[in-house]
Every structure is written in C-alpha cells, then in structure tokens.
Amino acid sequence: MAEKQKRLAKRTEIATFLNITPTEETEDFELAGYYQTTGEYSYDASETDETYIVDDNPTTVVEKYKVSMDNEQKCYIGDPVYDFINNLRRKRAIGSEAETTTLCVEKYDVNEEGEFYAEKSKCSISISKFGGDGGQTPMIGYKINLNGDPIYGRVKIENGKVTFKEDSMAISLKGVNQMPISEIPQDDSTGDDEFE
Image (spheres, rainbow, N blue to C red):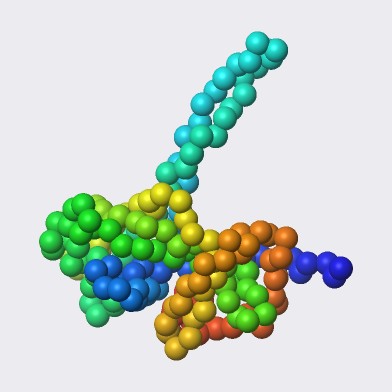
C-alpha cells in the first residue's frame, strides 16, 4: 500500500454551508465565510470524573458534545448567507423559525468521483450582535448551534450547487484520499479564492 501523502490542510478546505431555504422541500446550501476572517467549531464536551474503587486517581468519561460555531461577518449585502442571517435578525426568529440545516465539509478528503467528506446537521441560529464602530463596515454576529447527531456522507459541488448524499462509511479515516492539493476539484463559485 502506498504511503499516504502528508501535508498541512488549508483553512479553505474546511467549509461551512448553510441551507438558506429551510421552509422549502429542496435545500439550497450556500457557502458561509465571505468577509469573515475567523471561524471555528467549538465541541464543548461534557465530562464526568469518577474514581473507581480499584484506582487512586479518577477516570474522565466523555458523555456528549454540544457543537456550535460563532461567526462574525461584515454586512455583505447581496451575499445569500448574510441576507438569510440578517432576515433572521429582523424577525427575531425563535423556535422552528430559527432552524435550518448545515454542512461541515472537509475538502481534503475527496474520493475518485470528486465528492468531499461532509457532515450534515440540523441547526438553530441565534443572533448575538449587529452594527459596529463609526467609519467601519458594520458587522453581524451569529451562532450556529448543531442539533442532535450528524448525518455522515459526501457532497458534490458543481456550478456553485452543493448536493449531499448520505454515506455512513464516509466517516472512516482509513479510506481518506489525501489527494495532492493541485488535483483537488475546485469550484470558483464556492469562494475559495476569497481566502487565499
């Protein structure tokens, strides 16, 4: 078996997509991240320490995860994600009105068909702030709360459209195709060059 290629991942290879049409039957996933300089998933593990009678020191048990992503984006009028988030802010959306679906895509894990590893999750979105300092482009802050268990699979990105298909085997790292970065399928409409 050939040795896997080793290289550092690029931040553009971890992509977040939001479904901006949650009330419609067909999902429309759009790339989140334009005019946003940072974004990371927080896994917020819930842990319990127990000391068994055969041990002097405790054992830490990981019970569950509460995954979320805090975002702060410049108000980029016309960007589908910004317009969607700003509409939630205007409506003070709560309950089911604040819910949609999201994809976390790892573009360095790609199969021979050009499909990327992805996790699809139900999510709720809360707004944290809006505005900013004088003379500066205003910002909107929001949080994506991933709800329940993810669905594992792969996505195909063609002509700016993202199609997800469930594949429970996709989660296995044994089959990760560490394709050279020059050979990874690119789609300009996903905005990768915005973050080069």
